[in-house]
Amino acid sequence: MTANENVKGATDIPDSPPIATSRPDPRIRVMLWTLLLVYILNFLDRQVVTILAEPIKNDLHLSDTQIGLMTGLAFALFYTVLGIPIARYADSPQTNRVGLISIALAVWSAMTMICGFAQNFVQLLLARIGVGVGEAECTPAAHSLISDAVTPQKRSSAIAFYGLGIPVGSLLGLIVGGTLNDAYGWRVAFMAVGVPGLLLALALGFLIKEPRHLAFTGMAAAKPRSPLSAREALREVFGSRTFVLLAIAASVTAFLGYGKGVWAVILFIRSHGLSAGETGLLLGIIIGTAGIVGTWLGGAMADRFGRVHKRHVLTMPAIGMLIAAPILFIGYSVTDWRVAIALLVLPTVLNTAYYGPTYACVQGLVRPEARAMASAIMLFAQNLIGLGLGPLLFGMMSDAFKPMAGAESVRWVLYGAAWLGLIPAFFFWRASLRLSVDLKSG
Image 1 (spheres, one colour):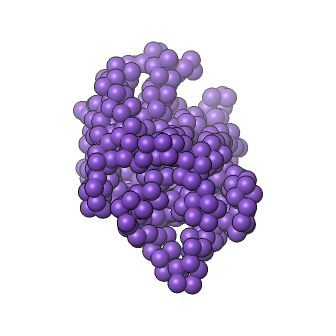
Image 2: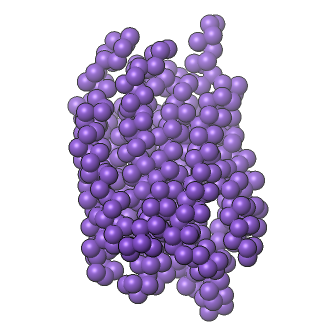
Image 3: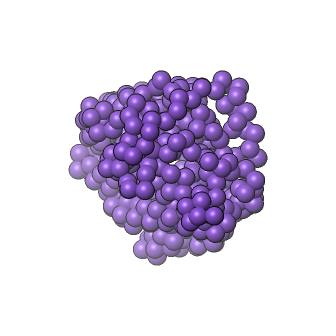
């Protein structure tokens, strides 16, 4: 067995005829960097509402439940429902995925700007739904593009690189949103963060070319594929028990992540007495940087140790979440905001390491014709349960605890959230035991 065969066999993740070669094509680098920028703007526009939630609550006189609905379920419901039919379209060999992403970017950026004009809860809710409609088109198509453009043994790292858009976009959302809110108000903050996306949408088609229509250096054009029916695509995805275990693990992770993301910010404003600008700057830089490190490290470790044994692709997410739970509990317990932020750093690194390994496995559990569908179904589970219910249920629990806990009700909710991190740790471990069986070769 040659060295190359040994590496390929160790990962056993399926691929279409890979566009990447042993000498990286510059167009692949441009594609990855451009998609990263798109995903940064995706999460910037999605998460800026987190730092603006308390000012919006005070201005529009909203309850914590309404804040949870606005920041979570309103966005996630349309994001998840539309994601699957859009993914079916993206999987079609005739679809230009770059054009699809460009349209999506323009829609969600424009709707983010419209949020700044809302005069009441209903108007703001509808605008956030519009953001969700636009963003539903992005990630399934992007994952499919990346999986077509890189070899299997580099897929975790490549998808993790794209996934850096989550912590970077969230970081910028906290910093930019908080700073603009303190200086000009939350309405200007919404309007300002939507502008870059509209500009990038105009340039996207010049920066990336659809790989289906373009043979990269050193590679023959990929053979045309016959599209799968909806039933075949669903059977392909749900035929893997590993996919189901990963979906459970990633959904609970998202539920806790989005819930903690919104309400930990509010904790530092309400209980620690920081302003929106101070909270955005501190959490954006410190916690955002930790998220960047964790997302990158998760992909790198998965590619490295997955060569030793395929189950180790998911080892870091499983062990990391186990370690993070008690540290998070202590971090939410302390009353000194400096100590609290310091204690949140390591858990953030460990809790964000799952993205690259999880979505690389998702792409490896199905044939190329079902890749966008597989990502869309995973995103459906993650966002409907995570983004849709996380902030909302956290807000409802906060309202329920207020008669007993008063202003500390958010802290009580976060106590429970810290220990619930043991649930995804278990399911990531269970999924890792089946990777050797379910990951396809090719």
